Amino acid sequence: MAHLTDSSTKDPLLARVRRIAGQIAAVERAIAADAGCAKVLHQVAGIRGALDGLMDELIVDHLEEHVAKPGLTDAERAAGAEELSAVIRRHSR
Image (tube, rainbow, N blue to C red; front, top):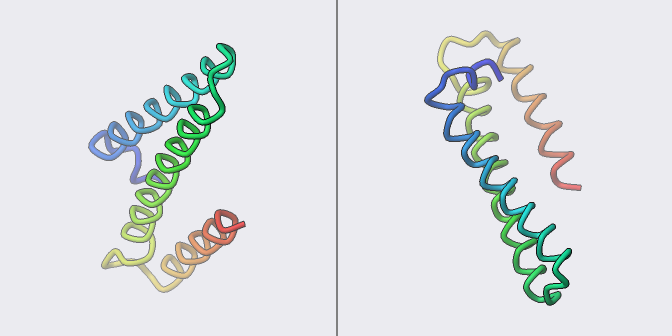
């Protein structure tokens, strides 16, 4: 995703990933500290929501840049759509 090299796009995505990493570290600490299973389950559910939100944002960015962007050739649109289809199929499993 070459368009992610732009810091206005990359920086917020990196911040999201770092927050998710922090959530994962919190789950690790909770398990190590013998926290209750309900607490850990809630933390994991929060991580899943955060990952789904990140995935949604990346899918929209890809769609806008590699499928719907004006000026793309038919071949570029087809390649972008195929890439997106493959990711959605894998994510849906």
